[in-house]
Image 1 (spheres, rainbow, N blue to C red):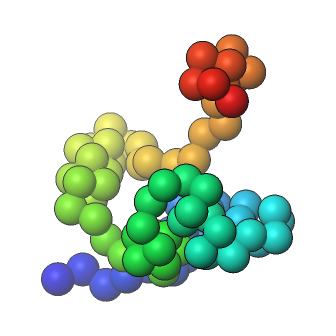
Image 2 (cartoon, rainbow, N blue to C red; image 1 turned 60 degrees about the horizontal axis):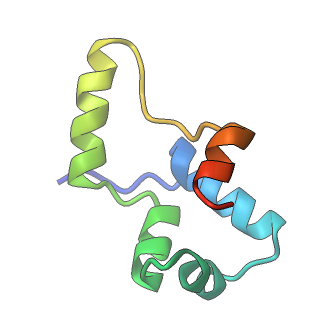
Length: 80
């Protein structure tokens, strides 16, 4: 069983962005449509089988999952 890593880049990114917008975890959960438990576990760096496996493959190529800003065009296509 892998340890949780509160300092992983995705956990840090989500936590930092949420706090910058003065959102609580409950508000982020409601706004994004994901469960509060998921938000809490994400910010605490709980390992996820899928992302762990993706990173396992990406690490072979010297990469890992990281938050990447989307373009304005992509944002418009998503309705944002």
